[in-house]
Structures are given as C-alpha cells and as structure tokens.
Image 1 (cartoon, one colour):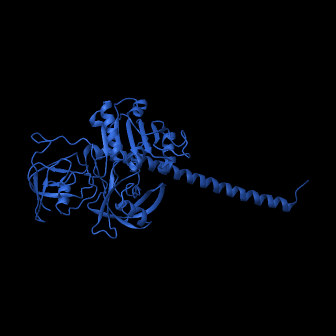
Image 2 (cartoon, rainbow, N blue to C red):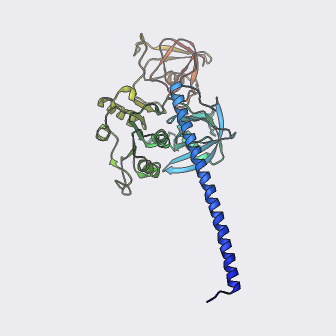
Image 3 (tube, rainbow, N blue to C red):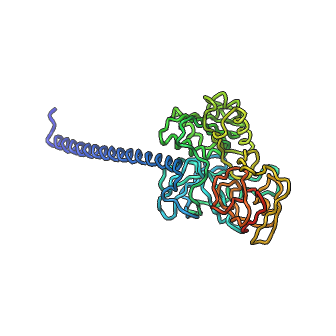
Length: 424
C-alpha cells in the first residue's frame, strides 16, 4: 500500500522530531559526561589535598588552614536520627566561610547557652565523619539519661539540650577542632578500632577516612552495643565492609532481643574481650584505638596489656573523670604518692584547699573549697579549665589531650607537686 502525501509528511515531521530529540539527548549525555569527569577530577584533587593536610598536620604539628581562635558561630543545617536516643547534627558556619580540616578522631568543643544554667555549659563531642567537607561538620550525640536507680540526679544537660532545643537553623558557639586522639595516618600497620555505644563516633571518622582516601591499610572495627535499637548506622557499617575488602566490621550485642538476627544484625553475642580479639586479629603488632564506657575501656586496656600489646600502641579517648587509665610517668624526683597534704591557695577568691590524695585533682580541691572554676570535659580535652599558676608547679594524672598555655595548668587533670597558688 503506497502512503499518501500527508502520511509521508507526517513521517518526515516525526523523524525530524526524533532526530532533534536524539541530538538533544546526545548533547545532554556529553554534558553529563563532562560534569562527571570534572567532579571526579575535583574529587581526586580534594582527596589528595585532604591526605596531604592530614600528613602535614600530624608530622609537622602545624596549625590548619582557616582555623579560628575562641568560639565561632555555627547553625544546625540538618538533624538525622541514627538510633534510639542518638542523633547526628550537621553544622555549617554562620559566616559561610570554609572550615578547617581536622584529624580523624578529633572533637569539637561547644559553649551552650542553656536556660536555667547560671553560666554557659561547655561540652565536647567527637566528629563522626571523615574530614572531607569544606563547609560542614557532623557530630552524633546520644541523649544521656540519669543512671538507673539514681533518683534526684538530672539527665545529661548538654546532650538533652542538643536533642530537645537545637532544631534546624539554631545557632551554637563552637571551638575549632582539637584533641590529641586521632588516627596516625603515617603508620601502615593494621589498625584496630574498638568502640562501645556512642564511642563509635571517633571510630567512624577514622574508618570513613581510610575508606575515603582509598587506603589499603588493614582495619578491624569492633563495635559493641546492647542490641539493634542502639546500633548506630548499621547500613553504613555494612557498606564499609562490603565495599572495602581491607575493612573488617565486627558487631557485638551484649543483650540481643528476639528481633536481633545473628549474622544479619550482629556477629557475636557478649562483650569485646581478649579472647575475641586474639581469635580474629593477625597479631599484637597493631595500633589500637578505644572509645566507650569507662568500665569497658578499662577492661579492654587491661586485656591488651596482658596480651603483650605495646603501651605506645594503645590509645583511648574519654570525656569525664574515670579511673584505671595509666598515669603519665612522673618526672625525676617527683613522688608518686604524697604523705602530707599540700596546700592550694586560690588567690583571687581568698580561699584555701588541701590536696591529700592522687584520686583528686586541683579542680576537685577547688570545688570542695567553694571556688567556682570554669570547666568542661573534665578529661583534659577542651582546655576550658586552664588556670594561671602564680606560684608552685603541677604534674598530670595522665597526658592531657590539650596542652595548656605556658604558665597555666588544666585543673581537671593537675596534681600539685608542692604548695600551689593559683589565680582563681
């Protein structure tokens, strides 16, 4: 059957439309290919720059670009619920300027203006992602309630403020990233990351950094929680292990429920201990990083020492007072224990305290004497309690994460060597 002139004309029009659409699609694909190529090139350059910065910051101990002194204003850009009582907060600088890279494992210090508090509350929270963003930080915070059976003790002031009050676009004051707990990017030995509960956050930063930089370094991430309700970012952890053959993720549930399926949600029932580590790790010649509840950390640190792991290869992070950590070696001539109490004079307040036990710090003595000193993390991390020494000298229970300015001491960690006079 011979087509009519009208049918031929319609066919030509349709062919022209398809031809133009095809040209448009090809042009769009070429454009997209160029965009992807440019994005990949930029990503490669950014990854290289990030790696260079990490190496320089660690080996040369130099200040990072775009850092700032004091507190800087950030706003809450996004909130994401990660697990029962755990939320990630994405922070962006209010001034819109770039933020400095940080070392994987470091933390942010916040100054919180909390209603009902007589002065700002200082809290430290670990950064929970790789340092790959030029305009954003992420912290993942667990809402802390009072311990079971502790009537009259309030819930965590800082964590509850984040969860209850800091909605999107709210502004907070933030110090630049800091702390001496971070992944050594220059070491090529296997790295073992041991996390309990919300202690996963600095380990996420470390593991994500290794994945992002495409490092082939062997990684073992051990993560212990009660059950799947407290399991943070399970899908992300599975992807880390699936997409990176050098990253091994081991999940331990202390009290799995009926909904928890072994092999799908977790790998081992119980707590992380020496037996588990010995059965999986290649040797003791690894770098070990720990962050979790104090009893868990103390037990694992003891296990690692008994196993023969070198002291220099055991690193841990803690916020808040706890016992069981190895103290810094005293200088020659220092007495590890004092026999007679040492007097501490707080010059500005005119008050005097007595220090008589290595279980108490200068901050403890000040508070007992009724001297109100600024403090934050109480673990030598945030630097808030730095106080000028007018006379005398101190030593530290353990190496602080933040070094105080010359002529000052971190009262939350310090022990007097002799009679002490502080500008407080």
